[in-house]
Each structure stands twice: as C-alpha cells, then as structure tokens.
Length: 250
Length: 250
DNA sequence: GGTCACGGGATTGTGCACAAAACGCGCCAG
DNA sequence: CTGGCGCGTTTTGTGCACAATCCCGTGACC
Image (cartoon, rainbow over all chains, first blue to last red; front, side, top):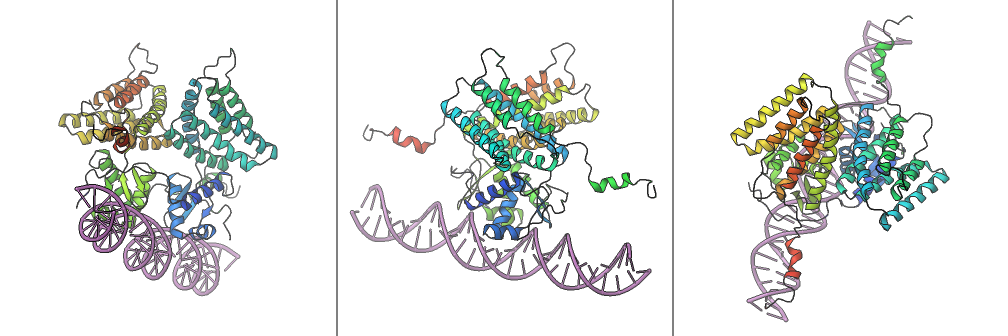
C-alpha cells in the first residue's frame, strides 16, 4: 500500500465542522451547563435527532465529541448520558483549574498597566452583563456568563491552547457543581468577578500588587469548590450492606 | 417529547471503547509519535481500513477522535492529515506543559521521602528501560519512553484529569518536535530524566531541596523547546508577491 | 506557449436498512 | 404474594450504497 510520504501539508480551519454540528454541540453544551439537562440524564439519539431536525448519525457524531470532552458518558449498547462526575473527579477538575488559572492570572498580572483599551473594554462590558443578569435574577445567564468570564481571561493571556483546555475544564466544573452543590447558599461569584476585574485593571497604589489578582482567583476557585458537598458519598448500592449490617431486625 | 428527567444515572467504564478502536488509536498515535507518520501525511480512510482490517466507518470514528485531540487535522471533503502545528501552537503547547508539569513536580516535591517503594521501583524500572534504549541506539523507543516518563510522573501526582490533559500535550509536543526540530543535535533528554529521578528520590542532604526537581523539569522543558527552530517561518506561498515585487526582469 | 475550462477518477460525506443488544412487561411457578 | 424466566419492543451499533466534492490530467482557445 502507499501512504503518501509527506504529502502536501494543507493548512485550513481545524475547528469548523459543518456548522450545524457545532451548533448542536453548543446547544447541548449550554443546556447541560445551565442545568436543564442534569447529570445522569439519558440522551436518546432518536429524540435529539428529531429535536434538532437532523439525522441520527449526526447526533451520534456530536455525542462522540461531547464524550471525548467528558461532558457526556457513552455506555456501550446503553446510550449516552449527561456525565455525572465522581467526587474525586470533581476535586481533580478544580485542582486542574487552579493550576491553569493561576498561570493565566500570573501572566495577566505581569501585563503592563494600564491594560490595553480593548481588554479593559471587554472586561467592563462583561462586568455590566453579569450585573444585569444578577439584577434580573437570571441564574442561567449568570452561570453561562461566569464560565465565559474565566474563558475571557484565558483568552487575554494569549495562549489559545491553554484556553481550550480551560474551556473543557469549565464545562466539567459546571457539571460537578450541578452534581454536588448544596441546597444552601451560593453567591454565584459575581462579586468575586468584580473584585478580580478591579485587581487586574488597577492593582492599587501601594498594596502589594504582586499576585493580588492571582490570590483573588485562587480564593474564588476555593470558594466555589468549598460550596460543594464533596464528602465521601458512596453510591447507595454500596451502602446497603454496611447500613443494614447485622440490623435486619434492629 | 419526553426526556427522562434524571433517569437512572449509570456508572460504568468511560474510556473502554470496543477494544479494536482503542487499539487503532494507539497504533496510529504511536506511529505519529515516533515519526513514521510525519506531520502533513495524508491518512486515507480506505487505506487505513485495509491496514487494520476494519470497516471504513470505524477508521472514520478513530480519525474523529484523533482530530479532537489535535493529533490529526480534518479538512472537509479533503480528508485527514497528520497535524502540523504552527510555530505559535508549538510554543503554546510547551508553555502549557510548563504550567502543568510545574504543578506536578511541586506536588511530587511535597511528597514525603523516602518515596513510596512502588513509586521508586517504577521510576527505576523506567530509568533502566531508557538506558537500555539509549545504549541500543533505539531512537523510536527512546521517544516513546520519554513521553511515558512525563506521564508516569503525572500519574504519581495523583490527578488523573491533569494526567490526561498532559498526555494530549505530550503527543502534540511530539508533533511539534517532528515539525520543527533542527537537523543538529539533541541529547534526547535521557540524562535529564536521570537527574530528575535522582532529585525526586533523594533531594540531597543540605542542598536547597525546595524546588530542585521543579527547577530541573523547567530546564528540561526549556531545553527541549530551545532545540526547535520556532522562528518565523511564513508559508512559501505568501512570500511570492513580496519576493518578486517589481523584479520580473531583475 | 500559456492559461482556462472541462471531465474522469478517486475520496469523502450522508442517509438508510438491517443486526444485535438491552430493557420492560407479562406470565408462570413456587 | 414473591421471585424468576422469556418474549416483544425499543434503542444502539454496523455495514453498505449512493451522493457530493475535490484533485488532476487533458484539451481547446487565446
């Protein structure tokens, strides 16, 4: 057989699928992000195909893509389900985010002030959007914007590769939040984001500017993770034998 | 339509495809890693299907997977090609590796010494393997082992998510090396790895143990990147108009 | 002599139809 | 009444065949 040795190396778009596909990926991705599709939900191929008005194999391809990004879980002969991270995986995702976002904030912190006008403008624009969503009590929008904020910072840091990785991690942390959030409070971080923008835009006169934004980001991520209930939550089926051990009559 | 709200959330294998698929992915991945398939090589579906004795759609799925990992580039109606990173992308990949591997080394460095016997054993086992490959002059094996070494460290750090991300980055940096390596030297890092293992196993008596392994890793990655020729290499086709501008008769 | 246009061949993309597997339900036995 | 078994239906998996697109070689025209 002949494998063309070093054929013409073409350069063109890498992400752009046939459009409709990307649209479905994003649509499902957002639905998962804002909890309309909670972890564990079955994603039947036929249903999705009808909803989006495409053929089943198109849906199949999308599902394969999302599975690769760990947003859905593919079980052979069973189908696709919205991924339900384990507590361990949730911790790992947040740890990974800390690693990457610390690096991003350090890069941003090293940027010359004042920030480039385009950057500052987009930051403020985003801040306005978050405040609007907050005022309107639009929780779904707030969640989506919160993710976009972190991605925006990654973009400003200038490393598209890291930004792409972080994008996946953000999606997965959204999943983790959906799976492990407590019934109780969560300030949803709009205030945290405000402070972060402030620290980036103007580190202050004499405060130890060094790493202020970094510190804020680490605290921000810690806050989010701490709002989750990641204690040992063995699956119900596992508990049965220990719960009822020697207590059949009790 | 009815989307089962919070259906039974099953838990089972997430990675395990039908086996044959994973085998093909790994096979192609390794072929790319050790330069048997240089960047730009066309990967015709039919040929691959015959080589691996599977149907074309199976190959198609594998190609889609590899494309998601940025190891191959999919061009609509043109086919699949071994990815040829741009210089910018290569720099980004190495930057990302520095970010992640620094975190990994810091975690490892915080580990109590002496290292757990299992860890030390596998480290030494790997060292032996690399030395054997080095002695035998087996370049392909050395490349593969070099990647495995970094992945091994990530594994010891205990974060499977980060390890998975790093795995992709290692594959892509292999691609970058294939695309940009200079004709000249490269000590292939076996010595660097030895020193890294030593620093991890025994930081030394009074040396500033703090961060010694981290420092070595950063230097190691810098060394690799510096051996590449990442200077501006505009594509030939772009140069045409500037090269021949007003010089038709010369 | 060079450039453009067209057509053959090959390769990728897509839908369809069938095969395999799993789930749910009902039936039967204990 | 409870537990197990077996069948039917639904859903997923796979291969095939056709349609669309692109590359390349040939020929005509300027």
